[in-house]
Image (cartoon, rainbow, N blue to C red):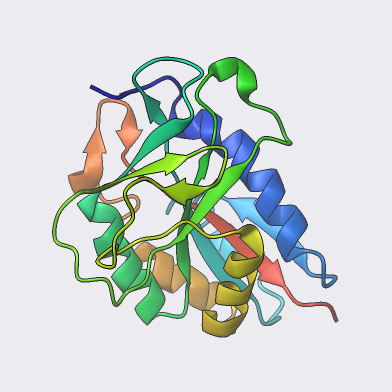
Length: 207
């Protein structure tokens, strides 16, 4: 049985810098953040709005799962709740993706480690958890077939997906949308905190 050797938070440390670097190449200002209703969604946070148009991107970090360390493939799981959240976010102009470090040992993690990226499209017809096994050396799906629903992408594809699917909005509008996402809804709370909380990227185009 495949098992995780890192948490989603650990994965974030290696995914976020890569996304910031890729998204900021056109001179954009990229600000990663978690959304909490009482912090980023607070009244004082809303007053930070300068009526400047922004765009958002949501990224769900995924944990690589393995049977033994140093193997050449990792299992990646996408939970049903992620697909449900993606439908809501994308219907409001916030593209949603997932990312996973392609490593099979804690000691192979680095800022240069390879990663796989996934588009979580609102058009996906998935009502259950979904799993993929990805070969590290080739960033390809093991036993790929024509019915594959989710495929790994390179980060350049993710930037293109963001550019084609994100909508401009004010920060106040973004807060309104995120308050309805369920990210800080007690229904999704458990002992360790809110499960499957995405990292959001506030992106300002070059002025």
